[in-house]
Image 1: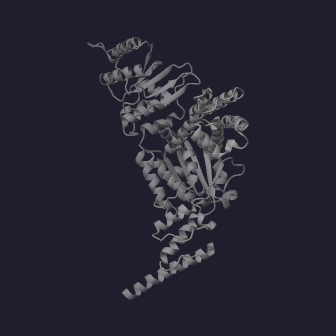
Image 2 (image 1 turned 45 degrees about the horizontal axis):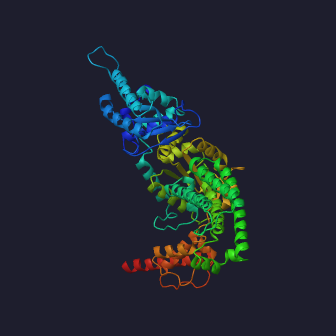
Amino acid sequence: MSNNICFENIRSFNGGQNEAFEEFCCQLAYRYSNVPQNSKFYRYRGAGGDGGVECVWQLPNGEEWGWQAKYVFSLRDAKPQLDKSVKTALEIHRNLSKYFICLPFNLTGPTGRKGKSETQKFEEYKREWENLAKENGMSVEFILWDKTVLLEQLLATKNSSSRIKFWFGKTFLDENWFKEQIYKALKIAEPRYSPHLKVEVPVYKYFDAFGMTPSWLKEVEQKTKEIKKLYERWDSALSVKQDEHSITPEISEENVGKVKSLSNTLKEMEKFIVSDKNEKVIPQLRSLLESAKEIAGSLKEQFKEEIERKYGRGTADSIPFRQFMAEYMASFPTANYDLAKETIEALDKLEKWLELYKLMFEKSIMIVGPAGVGKTHTICDAALMRLNSGLKSIVLFGEHFTDGEPWEQIRQILGLPSEWSKDDILTALDIVGESTESPVVIFIDALNETRPYDFWRRYLKLLIEDVKQYKWIKLCLSCRSTYLDVVLPEELEILQIEHRGFEDVEFEASIEFFKHYHLPPPTLPLLQPEFSNPLFLKLFCESLESNKNDKFPDEMISFSELVDYFIESKEKRYRKVSTIIRISN
């Protein structure tokens, strides 16, 4: 198969064939088997912003191996581009020791004709670049990955035949394909999905963390900044020396060790969150968190004791005392005590936040909840938001599955080529996810609507296990709570997240719904718990919309009363339409 591969026919990807070739080479570089263990891979993106390399392996000893790809088909065209890239790489990547040059063609060899072959010219170019590196005080080996080497590397990867189909076969799973698939799914989901009705509910945070959206990654970055700010404040507190000019207290000698220990623990937490993005960090973070809380708690009590020993009982938390010291003495004796309290509060918030953070490392989750709570709407909304952020998703519905192998059914539902196997589908999705550095999320909504009922009992564990084999694919399922025992296989290990509808945001939801249905806002707050159910609120608003002359009910209304009210409103509308038709006839 590799003999028939021609890089002129590589698919367009992320903007064109040039971008496709760069991505292709970077994914091969990531899988390069000769890289030393414990090295870290970095991908650089953006025209002119790659620093002379497309990607880098940073070795444990600090050395860097860089890759550069040029999608041109003659050495003459490649040379000026390579000169520029090499010069930039040597300026920016001072620890560069190997520089891999990827070209989509093989160099010409000696032919006996007058002039030098491309192979001879490339050897001269290498010597030029090696000398340039020496002038910069560096020793760099320049290595050519031409067409032959690239194909050898490709064939050495796992599922190489599937990768060949993706890169050199008929184009599927491009930007337009994902967009069309999402909009088709949103249309199928109507009326359960209403794009113009959106209420931010807590479960969206779970989708952000699980799908590693840009907003979530910003939140992770913000958390690390908050941790850094805390340990910097403690380091600053350590530097205070008591004299007539100091306005905050000096850390007592007996507490210096504890403060240093707390600062170091916070620094360790920051390092884990920034550098070690894998599931192993969760227990380590929890352990560090407990240690930090224990130290901060001990410091808080000792600082309080020191304040009250010096200024009197109750002064540590006395607002008048604080105001007097600040306004008349220009002194803040409770500064360290307050910092300890702020640290404990921040650590408590961080502990809760870790429940979201761990979702980054889950491969599969299950959204559960009663009927009408908004599972379908939230899944569709999450997929649309991901699409608008440049991330890729697939939305499938349980009602479209029948008896038979699930991946073949998924292939048919998505309209993928008949010759594509399960591995072809998963490898293609994995390539797409890797290219965005964010997982492709496969949503399967309403497992309870699949017939036969035992379908997922037979196939779900296998489906989840298949997804686990691929780094850049995740699976998000939903099922009505009352069907869990019927639909799910026994001893299924999957994180379940309960969708609570509009719980805690009932007021915001009612405002949005009343505005959407052009209804005047209610005179009384909607306090009964049924209004936390989106379906209940929707039926309520549709009933009021149909009965525009009806007074807004001041008393609580049960679900059965709402259904009667809804049917009555539809009957009134039907009678009105029937009367108009009879008159017109």
